[in-house]
Image 1: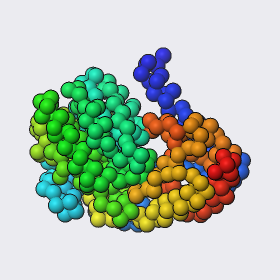
Image 2: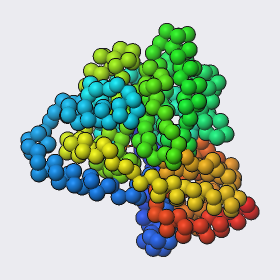
Image 3: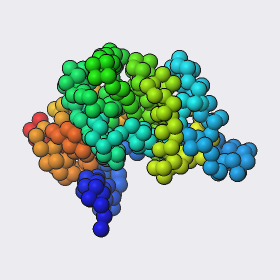
Image 4: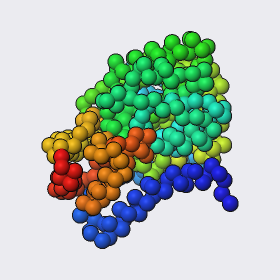
Length: 393
Ligand code: PLP
């Protein structure tokens, strides 16, 4: 007797679960090295050695009752101060520990901030294609997702955004670098978006909060990723160490809530409370202490760039069409046939596992998560070439 809402969620996630199970079965049948699984955004670069050292250091050096104890729902103050200073150093901002709330990854942070803001029926704008989980996170609080199409380079179209904002628009989610497209919104694109939001806030007399979902911030291939608090006052940043330090299972991230946003004190206490009552209580304590020691660790982003470039160059050579990724570890490939699910099934015949674009609100495309080994990318080329030939490309 599960709830109606959960029935819909379960139905929605069954496709991804089925693909996961199918991948496992195929690996057993053909051998893992002969299956090219581009379906999951699980980092393939191990966490930096410093993470392991920091775990041991924290356990050896700090009081166990502190390391494993409850703390303020927003997280340890020393950790939040270290993170604020690290952002200030990199971005020239002026945050303090007060502006940081430690969260259970980016997903936890998004749920906290959406719970903070949404009344039933409030609208949340997302740019198509988008991370499919946003649908569930917004539905968790009875909000309404409003999809806004991007241009042919997957860039935000300010005119389309302008047409979509209503008096009920409470938030806009922007994800940069982007899952599933791998594109990075430039300063120019961000400025145009901010201009629209400022004008609409004025027109309707509302506050529209921009939620910048940034788990891929560190995964940029030499391209600048604008820090959105500098372009739009009502911005909240959600960050995560899942991809930058390859720690997705550890569930650690943070929200930045700048003092300048409308109703700052109310938003802050609501987010702190939301962290508790959503059942997270607080972000994992040991990991908070560990990442405070690792704020300057670098991600070996070059490896992802190499995969992305090799994949893009060869797929284009085989006749496929895509926008070249500038970051993250995703490539959004145009399906040669309108029904991309048919294309995904055909790809499976060549042991290629891809995700249909409809999971990201955009049919006619498929997503490749190239956070796999370079050998996997290289070895998958004959399969892609055969797939291209199957469609006479
Ligand atoms: N946002 C985007 C765009 C993602 O791609 C992901 C994970 O893949 C998340 C949020 C959730 O990340 P986390 O593991 O930090 O919760």
